[in-house]
Amino acid sequence: MDNLKDIKALLSSQGYAVTEEKQIPYGVQLKLKEAGNIRLYTNKKGKSTLDLSHLRDERLKGLLGASPGGYPLLEPPLCGSDEAGKGDWFGPLVAACVYCDEKMYSALASSGIRDSKTLSDARIERLREVITDICPVYTLVELSPAAFNRMYPSCPNMNTILEKAHARAAVRTAERSGCSRLLVDQFTSGQKLGAALSGSGIELHLAHRAEENMAVAAASILARSVYKKRLDEMSEKYAVEFCPGAGSAADEAARTFAARYGQEALAEVCKLNFRNTRKVTEDGSC
Image 1: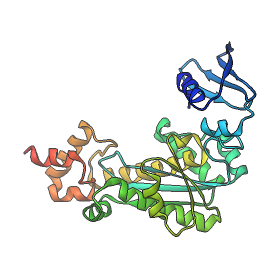
Image 2: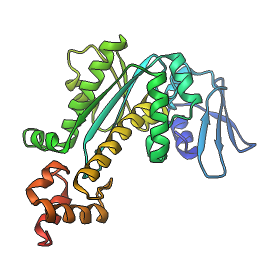
Image 3: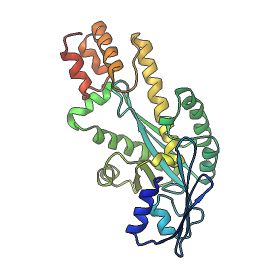
């Protein structure tokens, strides 16, 4: 949580009284009766950072998104899971799960690991090697476009397929690491993902913006690295410049591909459930 208004609303709703609010260098400090201080820093680019190191109330730390040990959302040891390809028409769906103990967590944090969505492709590739060196226990579950399209008719929901992929990655990582604590960037309900994990003994934690935790951020980088590698391989194989996302550039690439290889071959390179498929195949241009 990095919005002052939201923080103050949460404090009020939970019965915490702010006895003093004052400006400090690069931020603001809230002093709470008998609970300590909350500091919110904002840099020149508008990025906010919440400092709970001066807060004594462990319950409130949890409400504000910090684990009892001061780690975002969940302290190590833990397994962190994230995915890539969900919003991308071309290419695979990839789920990654990474095991991380306290020492590994510290090493990841000092290596500049963060959410893959904030990193360039080149940076993702460099950090992929760093992550696999620091965290040797990880699992990648990859569904090619063809495999995804075969699954979709029997479970016509992207999240249902993704739940299965996350569950497979998590179970395998838990088996190899001996760690049953799992943190997942929230894309579905705990009940549904919990059902996919039924019988595994895994302790599930779901949270929005879970990439703030190093284990989940590492998983997001590994998943994105595999996704981009497969996209590049497809581009080379078919001599078509496939791109992430589902915008107009993707539509143009699909028209070029279908004109060369036929509309039926789209099932080999894209997820057919996307609206782009109908738009491209019904517009009469391929």
